[in-house]
Length: 182
Length: 168
Image (cartoon, rainbow over all chains, first blue to last red; front, side, top):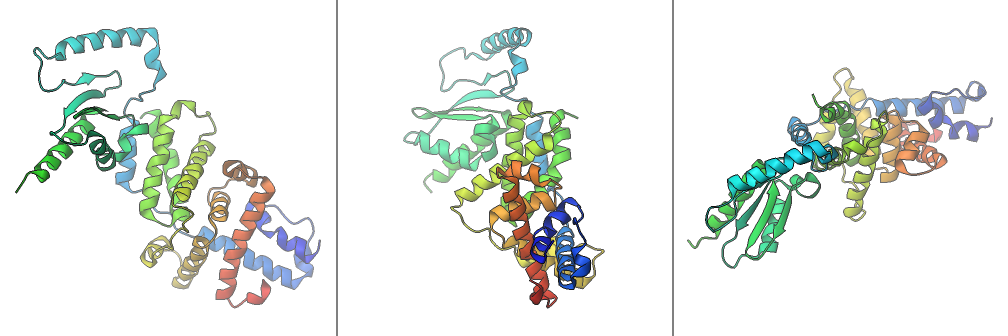
């Protein structure tokens, strides 16, 4: 083995713990020093301290992980499906408004989310409002987070957990308040 | 404790360490970390039992690359001095050693993203060259070369510090 080959393989040997096929380092002081330097750099990098995951970040993910998944296929088995259908019919009957009103009450879905229709103030741009909500209110919840938002004519349809529904309502209330003429 | 909880508790810390060293930025790391585990949660049923570690790191590597692409090839910003101070503060190290670690880590921050990515997987997370190459979607020889170049960069930092530049 020559100096070039020896140096080329230093990193791989440090990474996988293998030994050189011959003892080139013993007969070449320059390469021995090179190998020392390589080892020192490898070890110095390994001494960089780890830092813990911020608790608030971990908690947020664990909360999401405890929610039922929208795409959980166990719900599509005949038993749960029939139970969900009966439950859904019962809930529709329970929450159906008795007379036509300003909005539609919450519809509960099998994964624990509700679908709510939210009326917007006259002249509000529903698509723009929906974009703002996706950006400002629990951004991680939309899309892959399982929640959904649909802009209609003067209203939004929000499919979300109770927590997110309430955050959306608060956001819209705050926005309406801020837009009031002073 | 649910399956996802257990999975998260096992893999959260290594993934977090990877992102912190890769981006050098706590906010970007937190954002990426959430995306990664949200994706893992969404596709949790599709994971291959027994290879969860490789699975979550594949997601991490891809998400981090996507984010870097979104930033239009912007170079990862240098770590703020106070951030380096926190990260290098290993209590059992002598002050001069801490300074050395800090300098070596600064060298790591300056590596091209692809080299840094593969170096982190091999050096800090114990992946073999073949495993890391698989995660990063490159050949084993290319992975070995990337790690060697990254290592060489750190050696230069160290050689400069120890006045051994003639060795390289």
